[in-house]
Image (cartoon, rainbow, N blue to C red):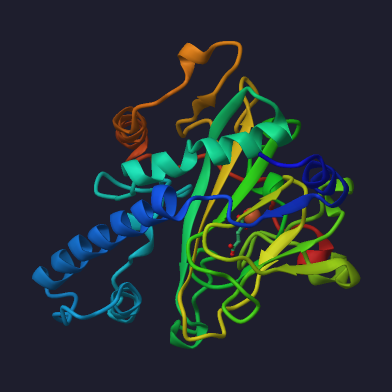
Length: 318
Ligand SMILES: O=C(O)CCC(=O)C(=O)O
Ligand SMILES: [Fe+2]
């Protein structure tokens, strides 16, 4: 549970670091094991198809991630906890395993979210894994914010406008530790009090540097199991991974039940409710089935709807 001081800090600054919120044994360990098994399966398939050389049985998770990346095998999409926002086909994979459902619905997580947005909590489908290898191993043209550093942005800017008034919170969960060397999150303290800033659509959806108040930038190092909560208008981004270690996080989002999620094509679910506890989803298999339905419905759509509103016309984007 968050203390009143923590809640006040969130309201004043637009973010909060909750150290040690997630239990190592009950929450983090199962996620790591689920992902180790997933990566082993992926590597076996890539090896069988000739895309990847055989890996030593002593290879670590990080070794396998790096070897896959260097061989041009995309580890990101099969490990992500969402479908892409762009076009995709029948074979496009994603991950919705029980350890992830357990993380999203853990009582420690939901108690904290309840303290910030109230007890009627929907799990929002804008959610991603970020497994970031050392920057020097990445291709020079790597621009994906799930793999390299993330440009300054507000999360409200990457949802559809219908969610502009939705009470939402991002929960950024550290699986490995994150620090300034391996690319921790940074926020502009107090920026949640400003309105939506101009974003430019490429190379990442991001706020032009001239609009960032550098004096208010705060780095947020956190240990494994820590969670950083922030407001949808809080300006944030992340540093490049200049270390030799992997930097691994999940970003989850929660909103008040009944309000638009900003990605209506993807499944949300009631994670906690006081007024209708019977509507709470408790079965990870049902959650996975909802994503499978969305996949079947959306695969092959030639023109998915834009997930953001930024055209690049603003002079700051020139
Ligand atoms: O971890 C990162 O690099 C960025 C995370 C982010 O933008 C988010 O959680 O909304
Ligand atoms: Fe973000």
